[in-house]
Image (cartoon, rainbow, N blue to C red; front, side, top):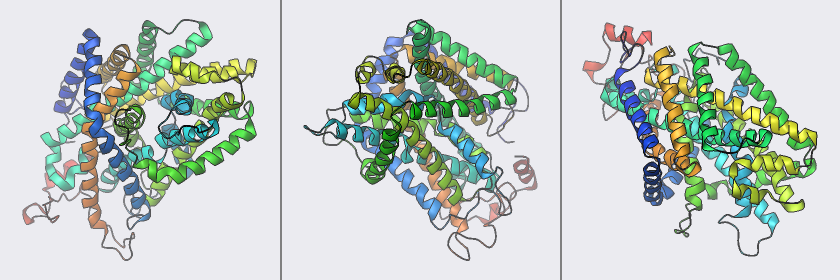
Length: 553
């Protein structure tokens, strides 16, 4: 495989990408550990200076991603297969959907499932003076669904679709640089390709660090709830180090069966938590609320997708919520995108888009509806107190909700279960984060380097702890918003590459259907692309040596 060392310290890795990424990210983390106050000031200042630009930039590109993904799923290319024409899906539909469930769940959703709707219930820019609490409840769930729904999953599905297309249909490595082949040809194996993957590594590491940081804070709150240990920085450092150590060891020893069992346990524990909120909460109210708020969300989706908070420039709601989420989704896209791409080989674009957009969004609506719906019911019709608890410490919102549901010993069991669930999601997220980072560093290879596994487990742990101790939630939010910006340009370039590549698919009997493949995979017959989209005669066919190299991939 090109760009991968065959011996020495960088064996199995792309030397330039690995060296630059490791040195820059590790040095930045160490500097932040030594100067935490300066790091907090730097991140805060950078975020404030970027906000006026990102206020419209992130909004318009994420809205465009959603429209593009829908078009790919229903337009002329809907029958293009993520693989060769003769291939069938690698996984059965049910197995594929359950794995999408795993991708759709995580510590971030547990963290915000109560905290976000309750925060919007307390205050949001769409409430007018004199609006009653019921209107605040409707708006709260609508905004939470918006931040966790179709727009965010459009980012993930777009990156995953592009990766799967170029890897499984065009025979290129499963990495970001491959999408630029129609634009820069064999230069993807040089410095330009390395720069693209380095930016993807940066985005991935900070996306993982943000998710782990949120989960560590909430796990600390859960352990304090159960054991009274206190919510302290030293406990969060211990929790972070423990989680990353377990994740690193699991990667080192290849305990695939153990990770699979933990993932299956996560599914059943998540189902049990949902049943608790449904059965011990106001069941009929919750079901009615989910139906009503889903319709409200769908009706307002277009307007919300282009909302920029333009008429309230002094307010920070957009930066704290929408910009944070869009930055988080973009930074997290390499991680989730590679996972979804790996499990989607052989699927047509229409099936892919339908599954990746609909299934995780549906799960999210039910999850937030049950978690946040119980909290809102307590505020509207019960004793209240969750708004105040969330204002004091956002990590305790879900625990206060369980406590105020008055479910007796069952509530204690639910608190224990959700704490265990946070821990297992942290471990599986960290485990997958190390694997995906190494995939990017090894030019798409799945062979794992033990040395670099330890190095990157340590680096990710260090970045997470540094961001946690240098300002907590605000620093986590600011760092991921900033880290996502350069990678957003990479996604735009990947889109251009995909559209250029899809031009070969247009010579079809009917729109979206083909009688023959557009061309041999680039792994077998590499073609140099010009500005006009045609191949030069000199580079029409790769040399036999180049052909063999691509076939090895």
